[in-house]
Image 1 (cartoon, protein in one colour):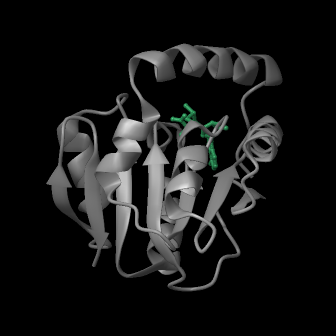
Image 2 (cartoon, rainbow, N blue to C red):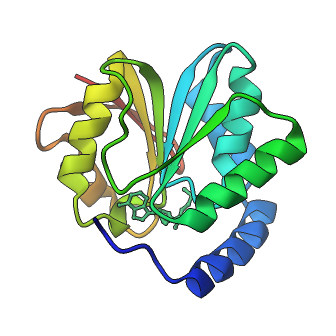
Length: 175
Ligand SMILES: C[S@@+](CC[C@H](N)C(=O)[O-])C[C@H]1O[C@@H](n2cnc3c(N)ncnc32)[C@H](O)[C@@H]1O
C-alpha cells in the first residue's frame, strides 16, 4: 500500500484548493468532459472532492460518482460535502489502486492532479482500463507533467488513445 500524505499536508492542500477553485472553476473543466445524465463516474484521487461533487450534480440521481482516494481525510471531506448538498449518488472508496468495481461498469474516469503522485501509475491505468466500458473516457489533467510525458505515459501500453486536448483537459478513450 502506498503511503498517504500527512494529515497536516492534506489540510493545507484542501485550503489551497478552495482558493484554486475560485480562480479555476472545477465546473468548467467537468463541463468539457461531456458528462451525461445517468453516467457512472470514478474520480480517481478525488482529494477534498471539488470535481466529485460537480460530477454528481451533472450525472443526477440515475447516475453515480465513486470518489476514490488513498487518504481518509479525503473520504471524510467528500462524505461531508455530499451530505451538505443532499447528494445521494456519491460513494467513496479508500484505496491506492484496486477499486473492487465491476469490469466495464464505468463511463468516465476523472484523474485530475494525481498521476504525477502515483508510484504505481501503470497498475492504476490497467485498473482504469478494466473498469471502463468499451469506448469509456479517461478525463485527465496534471499540471506537474509536461504535455509529451502525459501523452506518452497514458498511451504507451496501448490501453488508451488521445481523442482531444483542450487548454487543460486531455480526453483519452479506452482502446
Ligand atoms: C493533488 S490532490 C488532487 C485532488 C483532486 N483530484 C483535485 O484536483 O482537486 C491528489 C490526491 O490524490 C490522492 N492520492 C495520492 N496517491 C494516491 C493513490 N495511489 N491512490 C489514490 N489516491 C491517491 C491524494 O491523497 C490526494 O488527495
